[in-house]
Image (tube, rainbow over all chains, first blue to last red; front, top):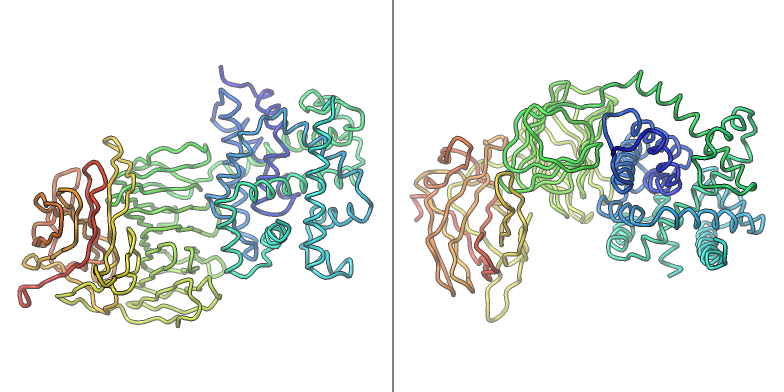
Length: 173
Length: 436
């Protein structure tokens, strides 16, 4: 039985962070990534396509979102490296194969871990990913060297990963 | 690992040199942990951005929608309300956006299939790969011509004609600026006049080509791109270092990943009648593996396996070796019926060997792939001659002999029988009647 519109929206919303993340990996702009995700949801419920299983819908959504992200990147920003298609496809496959329930818990844990970071660390993440600055721009804003920012960001990402894994091992998550 | 992660972050910023970026891409291709790190960074970026938007967003409209759509989200704890609001806001925006998108852009196609032969796979917005059919409209997507005799003619809405041929992989983009990314293969185009600020853009791993209106041919392999211009002029940029050259009518240019090589345009050479290969260095656009010579054995091309999809039959696994011709020679080889091609090498298993020649007009316009076949050859050293007049083009209407006067631009030697034949090619020689 094909999915109804509310079912399609529900599945895509549950997978929202993964899909938006997959777009971000292409265009490196979280706000535009959100826009493209919304376009993708609209297409899923308005175009003449039917979905009968979650993997089919997610695979379609990732591919459609990827396509729009690549189009946007080519039209607007030639300075960014374009991820090779085979790498992008591998990453999408890895995202799709992850059970939504598991990733849902992971995002919850991630949210908690980010909130528990020191203010300076949260500021660094906000400038880089919330404001969309490059690390060079963040370095200028914070009066630091670019390399130092890369190192600090790299450590931050690793510590968030450890924090998430620790929280996921806690009962109740 | 920390250095790896630092490079991955710098790669995302576009802050690496071309060489470093290529290393990172190679790492991402083979290292699951590197990809996992990138995925985690991306997810963290999204969650950070959500949090920032939550701080900025205070409108009542979001609160109103949150109760209507909270059942669509997986978040149920009170402190998730902020994110639920974001999600609700997104859902509201989706409904409005749907009206806007549907109203403004009903047609996202870029053109239609004017002609298709062989197996040409297309992955469009549906995300599902399918074979292209004649007259089928297409939008942005990935296409793959899965066999050496595949051919696709695509007509854009503005009349621009693109021909993609042989074993090629390309991505087409929709939008006001025509963009084609050729990962590998051969491509010809007749481009109608484009807006000055929106030239057609063709990207290969080693070059970026801007086209305002012209006829041209592009051949791309992993490390090199050959551009030939028949009419008009084209700007070619070498991706390795950003150097540019203008290629005018009846000229060609060659771009590699080696920035120490001079980038220049030179006239398309006239045809020659005889030519012999020299494998002492690696040829251009090689299929198979080039094996350098030793004291005991000459340099050769060693055939490697490849799966060919076929539209009308089961896929077939072939072992093939080939190259662009005439390599290291400014001339082009003409198809004269009385000329022969002599091929020698070694075989480990008894086989019939098929030879495929790619033919173009003098101005580089692709005409077709023509096939000839040897008798069954015994294991060991082999040598055989094939008359060019006996080469045929496999068309749905029958087998068409190769016309005379065409330029032969690449050759492939292969076996379709089961099992690795241990096929190597040590010499390829075109002999005209005058110098047999």
